[in-house]
Image (cartoon, rainbow, N blue to C red; front, side):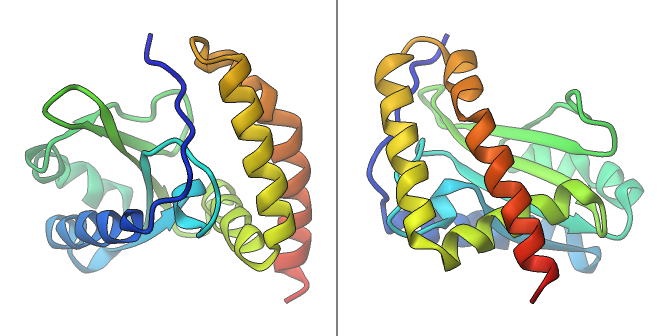
Length: 172
């Protein structure tokens, strides 16, 4: 099982996102937009050094048809991977280290809106982002060999912030 590793924010993550987004935009064409989500999208936030990308599309069938082009970029296609309506891909480097997670959702899907609201809320509320980063560091130290416990330890915080983020987004 991979080790849980949370590190200080790396400004190079924005460049890694831009490179991946450009590749994906070429592979997917005009029916998709690519967003940087997750902790690597929030400057100053500690994170696992894995770039999380979200593709918003009006047509999941188009993405399904373009899956070979995504795979050609080095991603592994995992289908819905436990979440109905999502398409999930992941990419590792030449050493087998995970580098990218790619989530594809149809425009308007509540999961897509939740991910974007969470990211935008953390960007607008650096105090909450700092609290989240501190929690992630503590959990990574406590559960360095147990990703499931790490994820479970974040769950209540993430759900509370997601609720705040969605309410904040609706009020904007």
